Amino acid sequence: MTFSIQRGIRASVVATSLLLASVLSAQEGDPFAKLENNRYAFDLILDSAAAAGLPTGPLMSKAREGIAKKVDSKRIVEVVRKLFGELRTAHAILGGVDEQELTAAAALLDAGAKPSQLELFRPRQTGRNDLTAFIVWTDFLQRNIANEEAFTAISKLWRDGADDATFQSLWTNVKGDISQGLNPGTALQNRIRETPGRASPAPGKPPEGQENQSSR
Image (cartoon, rainbow, N blue to C red):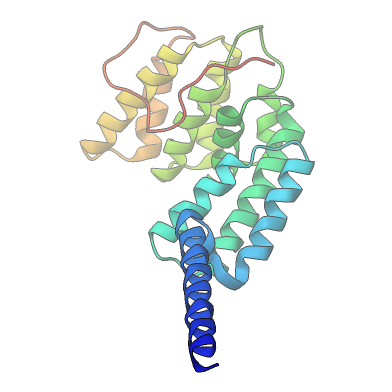
């Protein structure tokens, strides 16, 4: 009887250990396990995005970024929820663009652009992409150029039919002028006056961002 009881205890301990190991393994394989009590709210946001036809990739990337930086899980969910709203707004205005272009538009809204300003970029020629324009515009806002000034410059080039190389050239020149101590707004105004609707490729690349081609 004693042997039987001991064997039963050992079996129970082994089973418990295996279960615990399985749970820990699952948590280690789940990048969002560290959201803990806020995980449910995060999953609801993902479900809402999927139901609305929005990409969930940017939302998960934002959460991973926060986790890597050890941001409080409640704050992470707040930031993800804000991004969800920006993606939804951008999608409502621009229509069926791909994930990278939509993410760039959401980042632009987060940087301070107005939703109504995005409406200019919805109609376009087949194959034309607003990704580079959005990335450059966002970078200008992050360099403390007033949104109205940045919008005026970017929208002018867009209406003139500027290609990616033109936006890249503008970004390279403005960034260079700012690094030399020129006021950001003045740098943009000076450069936009000398920038044609189309230009040959200039040295340098636009700010780090999504690089992809999409069409409506």
